[in-house]
Length: 461
Image (cartoon, rainbow, N blue to C red; front, side, top):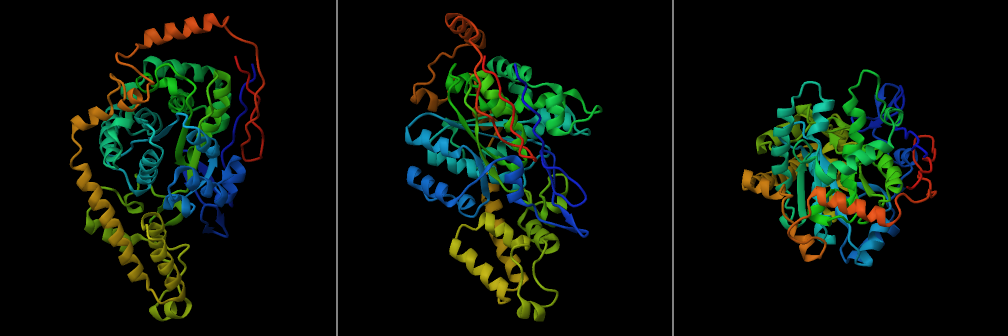
């Protein structure tokens, strides 16, 4: 049995950027912070860029113009998105999986991005989505948080997620602290058995002083990648793949997951990676919930949004109006313009703003004013939707005790549900009918890592 090799994340040095699941910092050159180099991340992580040919195929296959996040390169990288499009063409089932690490009682704009995109994908593909609230992770990784606080944050964040507009008949939201058990736990221990401590340590940089829960957590985050973890959606079927939209810093988790998938006889999850939503201070770091002055929260009032943009948003303009009129501004570093790139849907207006800002015709104050207007509208509508999300509504989205309506319609699950005990017995009978464990089979190597190293071949039992 060959163990998966350690998969390094982007390495930090005095002049290099650092990107891992817990820390994102741009490189420092001559003492000056630099924006994140996404082309370098594609090379380091061994992913593929989303090119125009793939966007054209997406539109041809789905009949939908690509979302602005795709058109503008905000979701810029992928692993086997083309395979998911093939599944869609053949009318074969797949699902979406994403998550949220709840460390505060409100999401900020950066957290909103993947859910906004996933809602659009759910509508375009007409597929279910599972959303993992990793409240256990936040307890393990945040020394100052209690289990009770993390669980409460998860419930509040669930309301934020529901307010994004997900279809109740095709959406399952779950808190790890509340849900883990049954068939989900069966897969967790299968995955955990495939990953050594040394692999987890090398992949994520854990030290001897880190608690053992951190090392084990990779198995927890990997488990929703496999369809039989959710019997109320997919029954005992383990052959249904998923597509995971996430920020690029989460990719190390799923490179290990993809290595383990073949060993367990499951399909590899496909991924589509987003760029980081920049902090108010600039694109050399991402927005952080723990630093209020770096973030616009979905719960911020219109006045607070205005004050934060005017006071903290890094400007690409010149020091004086006269210089700005003469030299123009730099939209590529201007935070207000970057935020419009994410949230202003009109391509023509966005290009007009870019061009007039570069020539100096549009002043920084006017650019910020347009950004404030867009964000106030976005957050205001969101807050109205969230106000309608009651505790009872949250329970409906988190209900795994009955079949998902989408699954019943597709004939994947029937009522009543099989229990975890019955599914385990069923799997044991199927394995016995096949003569137990089969022979070992070599599988294709998975590329990734900062030095372009191949992942090890994983034996299939």
